[in-house]
Image 1 (cartoon, rainbow, N blue to C red):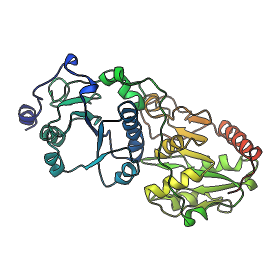
Image 2 (image 1 turned 180 degrees about the vertical axis):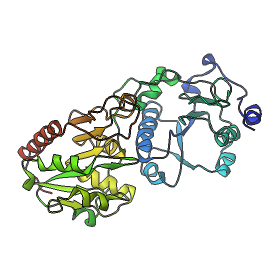
Image 3 (image 1 turned 120 degrees about the vertical axis):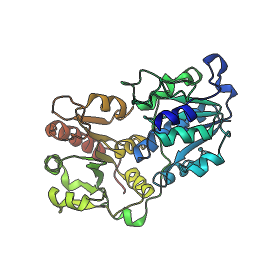
Image 4 (image 1 turned 90 degrees about the horizontal axis):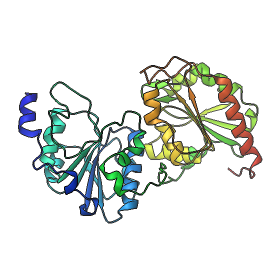
Length: 351
């Protein structure tokens, strides 16, 4: 069946060469994301903003699910959101000049629907090799982007055929600030330094005992308001963490409400998760905990902010990006105390 799908839908016609392509010819770009997680959305907002900054006239669209729809909808510069359904691929057939395919692997569904979409030009950013679906056998693209193994994902456009058309400006994540509700405002203690704790991510967490050791090492605890971000299991985590006298629990939030909570914080402490990238987008001092997985760190580490400390697990380097444990807490505490002291000596807090 897969061989038949490749034969029927896996070859793009016509396939263009580099001499046939120029971004000035392009009036519309549709992006297929690497995934539909919150961190993926923040990343792709950056890609779309790069394109809009360089070519303001281009219509920009992105394929979304209900999970991430609100994130993209909050960014006014994105012109079109396409829900990922077969019906919409048919409705958008031959309406896009350029298709940026970030999906990391081929699937039968993707090959079929991309054939239906039929954009003029297709650029992908590499594909994981499968027996029947791979870049050698599935020729549904004009240009691929090789050698991205050790490249931060925010830099992918620069490494593609598009790179020569984009100004080499420093890349920064950005998100539209959201209004903090009265309910979330009450999470914070008035007049104190606000530290948002985000120790749980998708499939990984900072062990409660390590976060407890970090907070216990804070010198000026009485001048800090700690809030633990809400996740499906955060109440169990809070019970293991203890410190209920100094840590408040956030109520459950929507994505945009969580953006508002993060934007209202002075410092963010996060395991490798979307909260890392939210902190970058809002230029917050950030303590980020990562597994000792060099490939993952290279691609997903925080970008371009001076007040960022990346704690890497003391385990030997490996390929498990969920192994977020065994950190040098004393070094983390030194950084955190320095950041709190900096905040306390700044202008008086009027939160």
